[in-house]
Image (tube, rainbow, N blue to C red; front, side, top):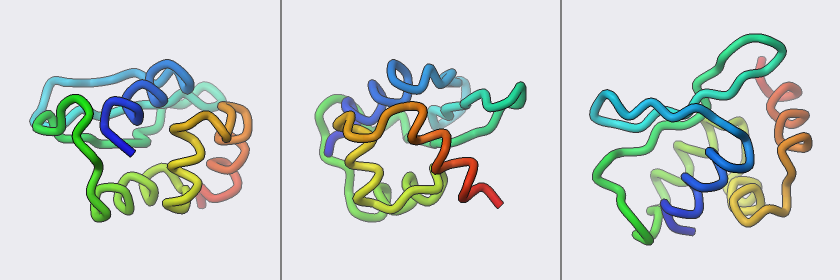
Amino acid sequence: MDFRRLRKALGNKLGADEDKESDHSYFYMNVDGKQYRIAKISHSSRGSEQINDFVMGDTAKRMHLEKTELVDFAVCSISKDEYVKIWKARNI
């Protein structure tokens, strides 16, 4: 999976707000009237560069997903509603 696909899924699919002000882009999702930071991506990761295993694991953990679920989310096998349901169940 590449960074472009992940960024697009976070922004377009989830409607997550992106904050680019610091050394990373942070993505925030609104759930039940509250805002939660769900992802952090380095500005140095541009375009179609492949996401390495460490970043995949870190991003999946922040999003309360398994690595395979993160890929499914990015390729649209998991809908926004399904993701929010998973996130709520695992956000302890």
